[in-house]
Image (tube, rainbow, N blue to C red):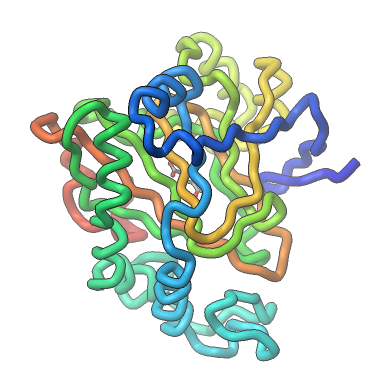
Length: 285
Ligand SMILES: O=C(O)CCC(=O)C(=O)O
């Protein structure tokens, strides 16, 4: 039985801890069905919503901004294959001078964030016109990253505004589970504060009330719920509720993981003021 890790903590890849996500691509033209599945499950997985060639162009722009020595010489840079050596003197991820900081302020990135297919999907699910919030995050993990996203709810990070919003998570590279895929905890949108507080007993961030735990095995076994997973391909999109617990696995492959997360808020609702400015890796939110 294979074992994966998240934040260096092992979790067995078996039927007690993992279950495949449901693919909702066939519901794209049926707004009522999309909404009711989203309300029931707290997420939607849509295969190939975005043109992979366009996503490839974004990778060319992003990876092309690094020193070529970061990438394995035997593959095109846009494949994002790690050479094993990180560039010297690279600013911290997403801070001024790092390619992710420039990327989220670029025209090609703005064209992705305002893509009509994404806006239409968001508005369909939210039940009214919605707009993407300006704080748009690029995440980039190579196998030297040594960390992954802890189990959390987005609501904990967006709690100074309306919760009439959703998140879209968009892989810009293929992201099989071993490359650090995002996983959702089944039926977790309705969990009460007591159940969530119990998870915080096992945490590597005791001073931070927002993440729940870094130990995905503990979370699954404590609640008796499985992590929903899929092997993502560039151009897929998942949508999730701010109340759904999610996390990611460690990237243990030579392939890098590059992804974007966007939030869409129903027009006229109050936006959390921290999310109204472009993201910077050191903005502290
Ligand atoms: O990409 C990740 O690892 C985390 C993303 C996330 O938490 C989100 O999209 O809400």
